[in-house]
Length: 200
Image (cartoon, rainbow, N blue to C red; front, side, top):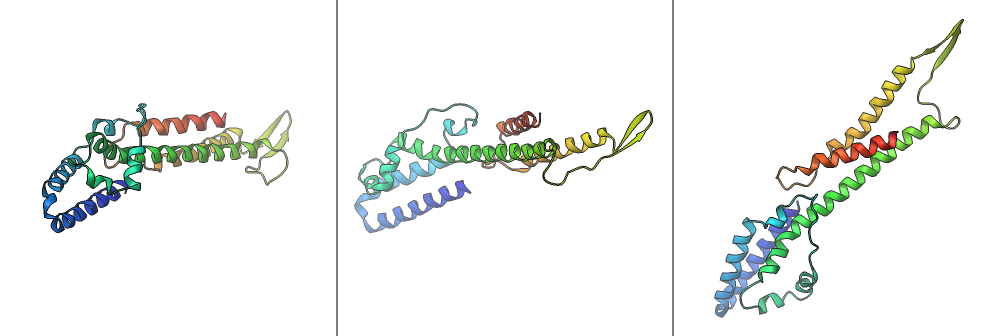
């Protein structure tokens, strides 16, 4: 979805460049080089864009990009097109956005899982309040006490409920852009680890 939006913006820029080139014949070389550089750089993302989300990357200075959004006519003033640093920054923008929103999804999944398990745990700690989740029947048969259903079945039901709660996170896809993501399983393991810590 993000890549489609970036591709659409690039297509619009190319179309407008062709229209502007048709109206201004003296700037043929500028837009020819600009269109050639854009089409060649879109097909091959930089190595920094391919890095997995788990590795720390250096924070980029986005002030020049903001300036281009504020004053787009400045792009036409440069003689040889965008600088290599600017092209690199634009190509890394999609991966940065994907990384940011993937992290947000993981944070929400951790919060939802933790809240669900906390709620389940609190329901079993309270002596009064909402109706019980399990009803146990205890009978005195001298010399022992019989509890129905057995505590093993109650514990098995709690474990199953916990597995269902933590299993929800496995069904949420991450933004990979069509590429296989190695760190996705680590995120699920992190969520499951947090959930187990809350359950204890």
